[in-house]
Amino acid sequence: MPHIPLPDHLPGITGLLEYRLDTAMPIRELTQLLLRGESTLSQGERELIAALVSSRNETNFCNAAHTKAADMLLGDDTTAAAVKTDIETAPVSEKMKALLQIAALTQRSGLAVTPEAVARAQAAGATDREIHDTVLLAALFCLYNKYVDGMATVTPTDPAYYEVLGDRIVNRGYNRPPGGHPAPQSTSNQS
Image (cartoon, rainbow, N blue to C red; front, side, top):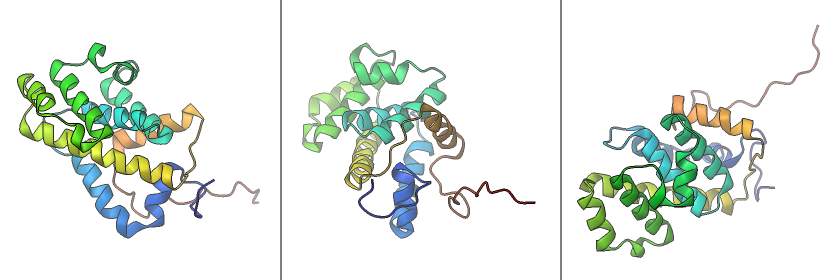
């Protein structure tokens, strides 16, 4: 049960973003820019970073949502799971392995990101912007994860919910829909 009253029909981060629209706007804009904006990393690769960090932070809602989005964008349901199990044996490029290791280090502590980790990413072909954006994405998802868990938001357990949410993330991104998220209509009988 959430620590404060949140819309019942909006679990996870969505209810929190609707609760406080003024703080939600810049967070949504940053998320949209980092995950859907122009980048040399694919949208699926960026979702892998979000899924990895959320998994390591044990934030079930974000982990399930971003794993599903990564699966849809990558066209398989094994890569994200493999990344979360063992980055070094996952079926991703050496550059992506190095960037995912940087994301994992950032999740642990910003101070854990070492010159060696950055040098590995550079040697594997990562650009300065890709390294920058990886750290920023990991830090952003630490914020989201702590926000969701710290407010004890509702986490759906039905995998079908994350199919719908993953599709929404992939096809609409992180922008608030015009008019927000209306409550479901009542199903009462009307003649």
